[in-house]
Length: 124
Image (tube, rainbow, N blue to C red; front, side, top):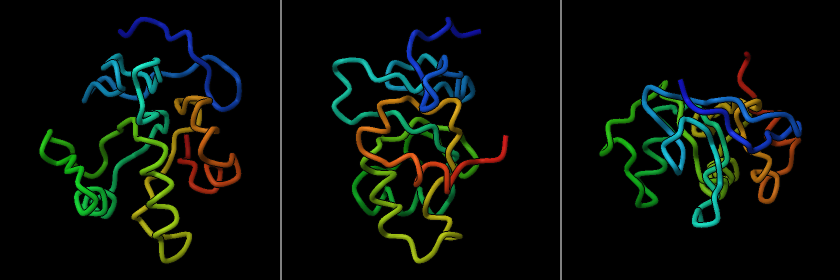
């Protein structure tokens, strides 16, 4: 079990663990924490899709090279998630990963409006 995070989610509640298999997060704690050294703001608790993996690879970050596949839960850079959001062809476009709001760090709100995160919230 992961040690409890001291970070808060987008609801200003304790941050929920996002994934321990695979172990995600900038610090590989299972949480989407954003310590001082995380210049990418890995704050968005996403559920990967094959379309997003293709999109990310086309932008120079091939997440499949570290063993990720569609369905994996991964802490994403807020800017890459937003880039996918802006590139989508509609609200049902699978290029935008669904978001687990309870595991999404409040720091995501520095780059992404809550309205956009809610629009792509995963059912929990």
